[in-house]
Length: 117
Image (cartoon, rainbow, N blue to C red; front, top):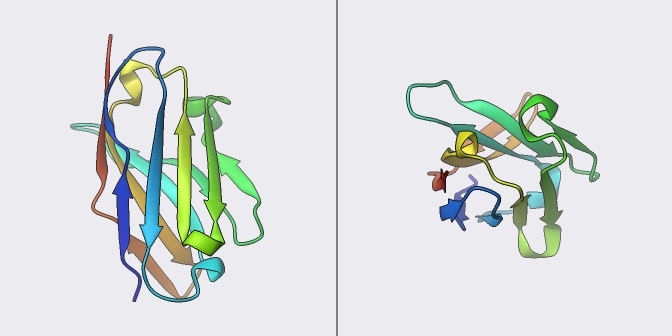
């Protein structure tokens, strides 16, 4: 069982930056692909970025286009999302996800990000 706790969300002006954190409890953190998703009101949950167990990354290029950076610290059981040049359309609840493909999949409770124009 893995529990994920996100933090770092808040209210920021357009053009600003935020750093989201997700800390995992449980063992074998380094065996999970770690990802961030987001969900705006009235919209479906959207993939943002993933960092694989070996450090490879994939981003939703259409949405983040080099503005966001995902990283992980296996020693701290943590994954981060550095967000810069934020836009109002980046607003939503950001969720952390831990997955071992074909085995198990966990979600955090989410952290709210609001970008004002």
